Image 1 (cartoon, rainbow, N blue to C red):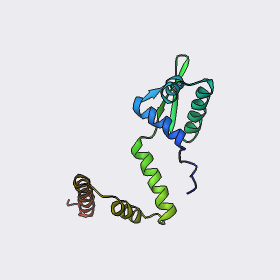
Image 2 (image 1 turned 135 degrees about the horizontal axis):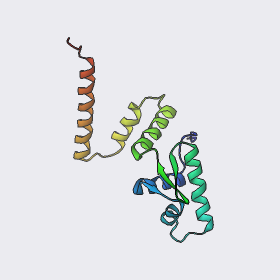
Image 3 (image 1 turned 90 degrees about the vertical axis):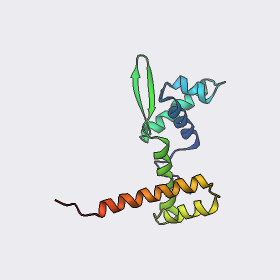
Image 4 (image 1 turned 30 degrees about the horizontal axis):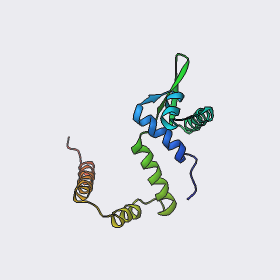
Length: 137
């Protein structure tokens, strides 16, 4: 599947995961986390990844003294949602149903996972019913 312009590469995802774990970080902190025995080229790689993530709207930088602090603008759930939507758009004409059916049928769901999924469906049903009810004056 072709990557959309707003998707992230594996290397960019690694940077996001490091930011999710720390909230904010400098390029040096991220380099030390991602490349413990890093070199100058490792620092440059992380800097370039952050520039790309910033241009895509996934991270934001803020000057703090003589360095920039970076923070993620999207969380893990939002990235998962974007990727699943892209798969649904590409393979299922935008419908999540075939994608969800495949995931449920292809994986053995533990009882607690089935229960959690059922609770989510019940919650959606309740919210839908609440929206359908006419408001009384």
